Image 1 (cartoon, rainbow, N blue to C red):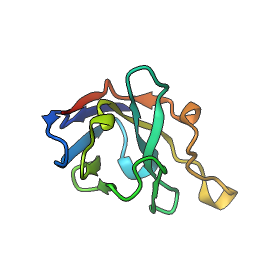
Image 2 (cartoon, one colour; image 1 turned 30 degrees about the vertical axis):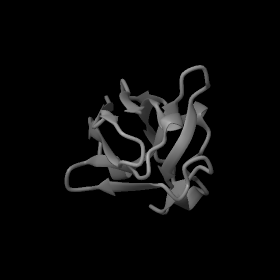
Image 3 (tube, helix red, strand yellow; image 1 turned 90 degrees about the horizontal axis):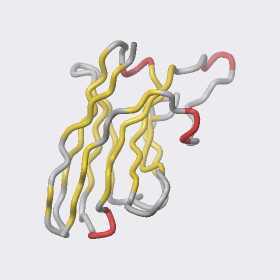
Length: 128
C-alpha cells in the first residue's frame, strides 16, 4: 500500500524559496510516476511538475522557471524547490503518484491529474 507524506510547507515572504518533500512508503519512488500538484483557493488542483518515465523533469507552464523537481532515491522522496515565491503561489501542495507503466510497452507518466491514484494529505504554502 503506497503512502505519501508531504512536508516543508511554511509561511514565507514573497521572493523567498522553499523546499517541499514527499516521503514515499510502501513502494520505491523510482517505480512510480510521481508529480507535484497544487490547489490555490477557489481553483481546481493543477499540475506543477512531474518526473516522466525517462526520469526527466517536466514542468507546467504556470511555475516553469521557478521550480525544480527531483527525486532522491536514497531517501525515497520526491522533492520540489520553488524560488521567487509570489503571493499567488499560496495554496496547498500535494504529491501524487501511480504505478509506473511499462516503457517497453509504450507507457508514459501522464500529466493528467486523474491518472494519479495515490495522494498525500498536502502541505500548505503561504506567501505574504
